[in-house]
Picture 1: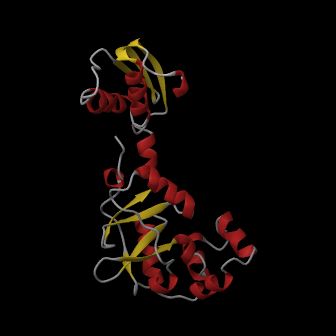
Picture 2: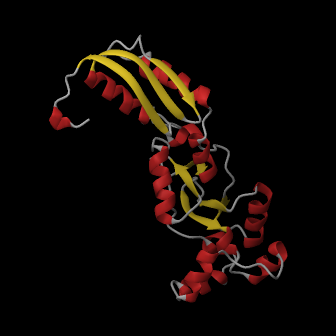
Picture 3: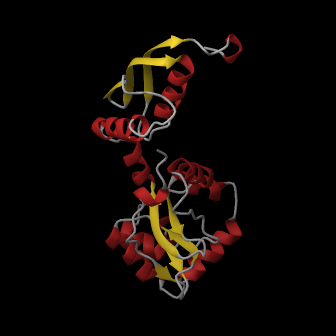
Length: 233
């Protein structure tokens, strides 16, 4: 039920090596319409990431690809205004290769990481995409915010099918044959009857954890109320 990074990541990902000139890095970003690329060593290990913001420190790139009037994002302007990392920024602005321009170490994720954890990583580090690496640190793909949005924007039919097949169809702890599922705009409605109230609660929680579910309307009925008052409603 919990979708993993490997389920939504892009396997064919553009990358550069440490000796790639900044002009070539710029061309890769433009050609692939991405805002950052991983930097890998000779064995494919991710050693850093070069972003659009890294290249924009160089006036030459700014004028060639974004015209002279381009202004960096607000986050970058505020960082420069308070002097955070100013010396490092100036040093990287003089760089001419990916290794000299990149941010390192790279923030990466693993293919078996949940998409929820990947989203938290992006928010925590203020990045829009994460290189996906294996246990040895070798590049396998990349996951972006757009990939995460596809999980949240799943079609109602896909959500309903997963609940019916994976949650209800594979259930071994209760008879869920009398449960009906309907989905509208990501909101799941559960109708039907169960033997125990505790079973209804477990089912509702499992449905809530299904990728793409925004909310659950619980209309389930039960024969035996086996939930004590100390356990809450």
